[in-house]
Image 1 (tube, helix red, strand yellow):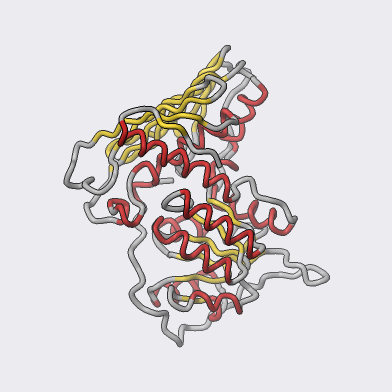
Image 2 (image 1 turned 180 degrees about the vertical axis):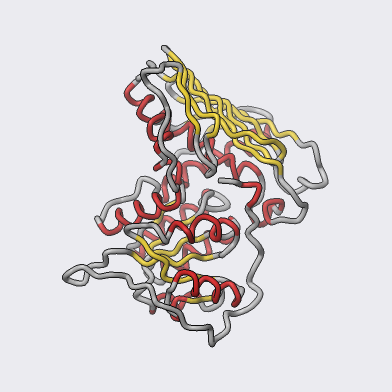
Length: 368
């Protein structure tokens, strides 16, 4: 995504007021027998990502529709209700959110909050009997991930992590190249994702809120290496560098790390809040392939060393596709491929990265 433009704000300031103007209600649609044609989604947190990408995508989805919002700003609630046409009963604030249990129009809660709030709202949503879709990274640490997985399993609801690129055509083709050995065995991956962080007081610069480049953008490159190789890393060696110790006093600015896999494959990866970097190269026995625009939402651009196997597809709306697929999986009674354990695996890798930085040596990645 266009990470340098995102500014989710701290909220929890005020309750949503009554008396919002009425608007046309968007119907859920029912098939014969009462089964929903579309699942109702409520978006928790109406910052830049929700405004630019998630809301507009829900106007295009085939299996999902906007059924509510959770915000600490009454003006935003009124704006979203007028734009998306959900009922007054679909408006909540952070204090009365638990009342969503009484709203049959809402099936899925999409948590788009600072990382430190992911666990709390996942547990509250699960307790209310709602399916959960949470922005990456899944949580602050692996312990929180396990709590979230357990809570959703106990409540009988689905838990998904917003790994939009697992549904993106270029990324799916890279997975196919590796699995089918189109270029032979893939032996090594170089990848990185970064942007120049503006400002000096955003939540991404706060350790307590889950800030730092690794959690924010590094998770994408970990994902890329894991799903292209189709296996989990066993050890990690990492190095952190900083050019602005004041601005990045609490969180990481730039980290480079190497992941080693049991098969002998390796990946050299980078995350940064101080440079623009958005690419991936896979090195195989009989050629190479990759992307010069890999992880963002502004359009993917792929390439390969073999013109007979190009990496070129039409662009897609990542948010439309992922919400449609998660909704369809729920309606079909299937487990999502971006379910909770997928988020836990990335979290365990990131914990190994931080351990390696602290110890100055290679660290073992804990198994799920």
